[in-house]
Image (cartoon, rainbow, N blue to C red; front, top):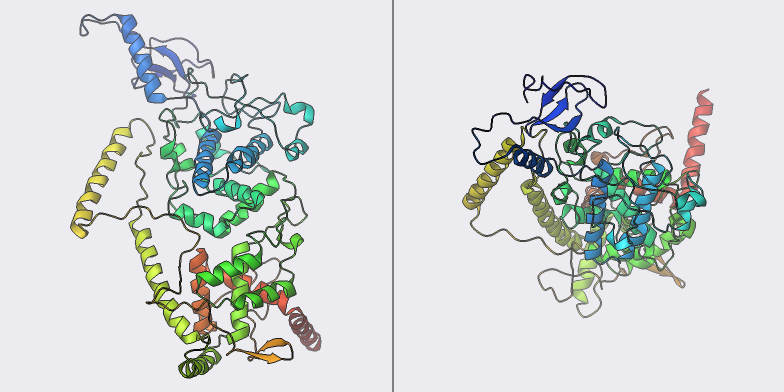
Length: 588
């Protein structure tokens, strides 16, 4: 840019009325005060150096170059819309019905645009000076991802009518589209029109859209449809690259240019965290003012009885344990519809961590059976081993020690592969992000050098071709009776740890230790604390195994186990609380 060459341009800026102009790399005049780029370009005076060419042709060439370089005018919310469309298509490829994208997610996104006053309202909050033109034609449900334009208004479900506007306003809502022709308002600090303002925006009561928020929208849609995908499954599919998340911006249309502030908005360099997405799910559901979700009943995949069976199979535990997990679910009331169903408009809006809760129930049942104190479980294993040697034709008793040895080996191998895959993951995208057009060639050159180095090092380290992306599966561990290398414990009996009393079965173990003796106060950010050194090695192994399975922190699972125990041993906790109160009274 050359300020001296722009001195001949004396018109006032249409935005700030200043007369202070510079020249862009494409020959366009821009205001040095407000960075407004005009349609006017510098006239070519000397044509001697360009034979057989006319000034009109040169101006036409400059405009064409500008269009291809700058691309379309687009808003940040349209970038997130594109990511949501990619994720919806990925879920569809995983076997989810098309109605999740065309009906549920489509309407949740429309609801967000309306509540955040970006579209589908009388006075949309536009981030630039110009008032965009309004599209008159409507788009069908199937076409909402085909263009990077905001959706035209279509029929909304009943819950959309109860929000910020009345039924009569629904037909008058108009979204703001992308203006592909006009380049006068393009920001020189970002590819999107509102990238700079969006990154600085902090409005109270408005949930600001981020890339992790897109996963919250997806999980809300899955929960509304009661699909057979838990939150941990969703995040694992993201990790395995089956659902776009890291570098999802590289699949934007070619004309949606990203640079400058867009880098901080759409660039992600960390894996999604379970607890973070869980909180964002509740936050988005509450902000959208959604009604009570469809009931989670006993025949639903998210019900703890079904999930407990799934995880028992996954970690190679006996099928007979399912009766005990169902009994715990019944005693604690965790299988009740009102407890399981998400209701965003309730006073204390919260949804159940279905997968974490199911795993916590299994941990409690293991403690009921084997105590997990690094003593009793090994004594019971000795009895089971002796019985199995004497009665080889009968149904084998479950041997905790043998199970531990097989599962530890499988767990260590799986975890090592997972850690290696994470270490080798390429965070840099194929389409480099840069801060300005000046940095563009440098960014692409650096990317080219990185790719060449990676090829050279991969050749030196391993000459074999890298394995392709593995197919998605709900199970990470597979156990079958036909597998002769590893014992499958699904059909093993719990007779060695249970005893008959009348028509009922009781555990031989009459002891139990609580994972948490005292819960943190209500103003604390966590329910309880977890220090590995305070617990037995077998309990630590169980928590580490299931935490890896769900890709969550061990402390989060320990907290959920404590909450299950609190419901199961409610009387014991109330007695402990009374004792502590009486001690305080004596001190005074």
